[in-house]
Figure 1 (spheres, rainbow, N blue to C red):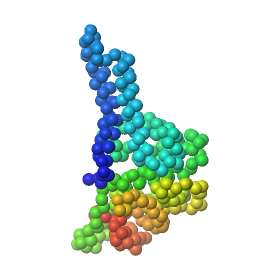
Figure 2: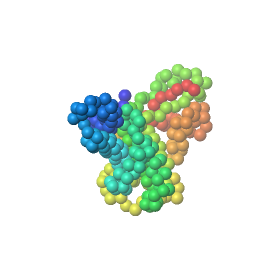
Figure 3: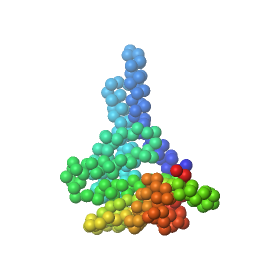
Length: 266
């Protein structure tokens, strides 16, 4: 099960209920309108029906905006509350809620911002915004990911040498990596320390970042390229035989760090 922050389940259920009530009540009202006795139709009129439906639709919209603000706090701070609402409105229009849970809603927000950056001149001055939004999403996912399991060394040692070479490793579900030419770690630190954000300078080479949950808090750390590439290889399903060619030293290191949490035989 997912790790839940205090009252998260209750808060999320209220959000979902509010978001879905507009659709439900719209259907109920339309059905009632079709079947009511016109001679005694005192409970609703076309005018107040429209008002109520608009109110529910507004609640639905506000609910999703609040969820996006909660999920993308660094992005909102960077562009300001008013402009973030514009971005959220645009996203909601193209990506209405289709699931019964809000858990994954907003996963494509960074991609949406990237697409808008080609259409909106005001975003040209924020070329780092897509990467920052991606970091926001990964931090959100890291916080609510399931707890890591411990790599079962004993079970692995019971495999034959041939079986061990065919093993695919599994990383913790709270781990994500980012490649960016922008100082994501510094922007994250300044945001959570509520300090002023200085001039943001792009590097002429890539930075590599590890997002993970540490002591119940999502964090961003700068890592070296080999570790970044190792995690990418693991995620794409490379076997230990493949990994050992280039990353032989990183396999035991990542297991000891608790980043590698399990294995499966290919």
